[in-house]
Length: 373
Image 1 (cartoon, helix red, strand yellow):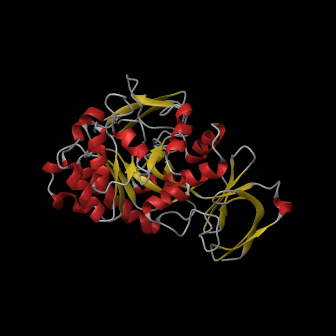
Image 2 (cartoon, rainbow, N blue to C red; image 1 turned 180 degrees about the vertical axis):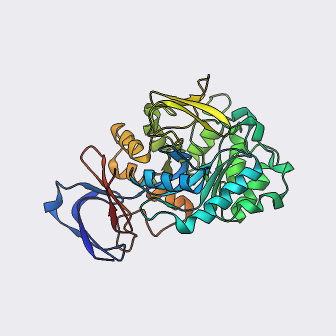
Image 3 (tube, rainbow, N blue to C red; image 1 turned 180 degrees about the horizontal axis):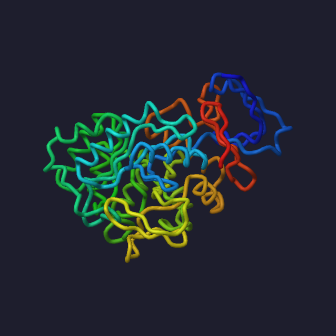
C-alpha cells in the first residue's frame, strides 16, 4: 500500500491541531503539527455505529446484498465500522441472521464500512417497554434453554435485554462471561433492578431515555441508574426526535467523557425520504424525518447517520472533539477494540474528512480514500 500524507485540522483526543498525517501500510505512521494546515478540512477518526438496522433501502436482517448495500451507504456518511443490528424476532430468525452475517463477513465489500460482528436488540426485553419491537416475539430468558442461544454467540458483540425480567440477571452474567456486552434497555426496571443489572455485568444502555423507566422523582428507573454509574456506557440517538437537544448537555455533564456512545438506530428507509417500511413484522411510517409505528406516535428508530448526529451535538454546544469521541473512540472502547478510533501513531487509518459545516468530504478505510456519492 502506497504511503501518503493527509493534511488538515486534526481532531485529537481533546484538541484540534493543524497538521499532517503520514500513512503507511494503512496505519498512521507519524503526526506532524503544521500551522499551514489551519484552513484545511477537519480530519477525524472514522465513525463507528454499534446500533443500526439498515440504511439507504438496505435491511440489516436482509440478504447478503442488503449487507453489502448497507455497508457502502454507511461508509459514505463517515461510518467505517458498524454492527448490523437485528430487532426482536423469533429465535430461529435471529440465529439465521447471525449465520448470515458470519458467512458474509469474509467477503464484505472493501469500499464499505467494516462489520465488527453484530448486535441483537432483544428478544429478552420487557413487554411493558417494548417500544417498536414486535410483542409476539418477546421471550423470557428463564424459559429459553442456554443451548438454544449458543448459535447466536460467534460474532455477537452486544445484546439488549431487560434486567428485571425472569432470568435477566442470569443471562447478563452468562453474556458477560462469554465476552458479550449486555446492554440494558427496553426495560421497566426500578433504579434498584437496573443497578442489579449493572452489578451483574451489564456495561451499556440502549438508546438512553427511550423505551425505559426514566427520571421520575418518585420512581427513578433505568435512566437514573445509567446516568449515575460512571462505569456504564450510554447510547444516545441525537436526531432531535428521540431525546430533546436540551437534555444532551445534561447527559454530557453527568457521564464521564468516554462513556457517551452516539448511535443512529437507523431504519432501512434512512436516506430515502418519506415512505413506509417494515421492521420486525411491523409497519413503520417515515414523515418529515420522524419514524413511527404506522398509525401511532411510537418512535420506531431514526433516519439519520452518525455524521448528522455529530453535527447535531456540536450545534447543541458540545465540543467537536467530544462529539467525535462519542462517534468513534467510545463505541470501540465498549467493544474492547483499540487498533482504530483515534488520530494517533500506530492506529489504523480509518479517517473522515469534514468541511467547515462538518459535512463528509471523503472517507478512508485503512488509508484508502473513498469519495461519497
